[in-house]
Image 1 (cartoon, rainbow, N blue to C red):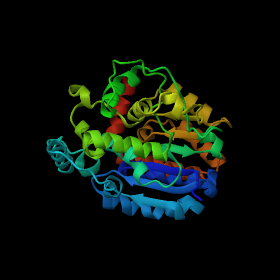
Image 2: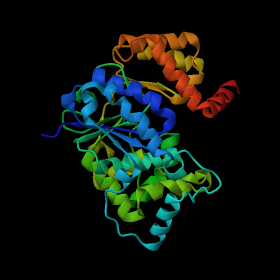
Image 3: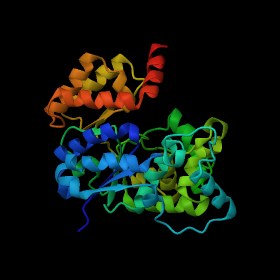
Image 4: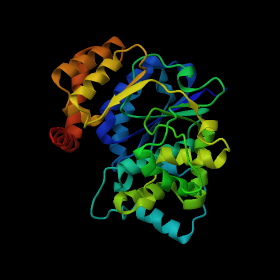
Length: 354
């Protein structure tokens, strides 16, 4: 019998240290009988090097290690037969040759913009996941307390999401996402919408159908998102995202829209990012210590901006919850993150000082 969940994480070289913390959190706080498979999807120019780093982490997943599948872009994107027209073949060739940004080499697949390609991989995960639901994570998501079926799925079988009135970012990304599935942004008010941050839970069949629908209309999903390696501010027609595209498909495929697909309830997770203020970091750590918090989000860029007192507080939470055994383990992770993401951290410090 198929188990409920496929856990999906997209990773690049700069985030591998965080993946170890995520693996330990899953091993400690997730029962194997809830998990069909754990998919780690590599999105990096040097796929082989990242794969060599991830394979030794299998032990960190504990009893879940045998469920780990490490997949590259070819594994994820190559799972569907498509008949492409000329323009779609050209776009795919450009994506595979990094011709959308020929004067800049990004860190993602084939030198494309990693942030955009990871969204394509999350959408295409439905082709390769075997669980009934996909729990889509980023490397920053670290489980810190026991996870159950009820944390992710409502009693009626709908995956849980935080439904909300569209805000600034929703409105930035939704119009292009609607057009991608064949809807007009002007025909109705599309509300409510889900959150656009992870963890994000979706039925695997819905995810697969949505991706197949978009690909039937617009061609390979990897080419569709690699176009965003160009400056999206100059190309608003390309300003779509994976989660807003799934919201759009919910409106297309169900008369009840998003509310027919997702239940309004949310896994309690708290996170910070590289530009978070000291006050925001303090609130994050306070929330992380609360028994109701199931996951914390530790962005890779935070490594260089955590004050010593906050590093101690964070290590205390992780030790108390069995993710690490002693503070030095967190120090090693933060140092590795800082070394791998030094440019991003410098930019974050400039924004914080402004």
